[in-house]
Length: 122
Image (cartoon, rainbow, N blue to C red; front, side):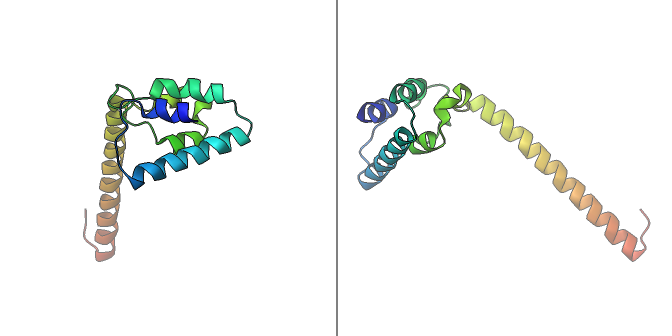
């Protein structure tokens, strides 16, 4: 586990006191639980290597190590590198546009119903 934690934090470990201890403890617990469920340490370590590091392209949205372990993301190669900033921006733009459209549709329907109840022609 120490090798896994060291590799996952390589280049980005900072002295954060109790927060760092808490994060590390959660990662150790998640790793122990994954091993208890029968997963091989080699498979987990092999999958975490591509997403290790800080400020590395393609790792902007990689989850915390404990989350990654608890959700068994090493099983799905597409999830191991996280979402690139371009993918995130495109997805955010699409979702924002959809939300704006739903809001406009809702407001249009409320105005229509209000006008209908008040007898105001469109």
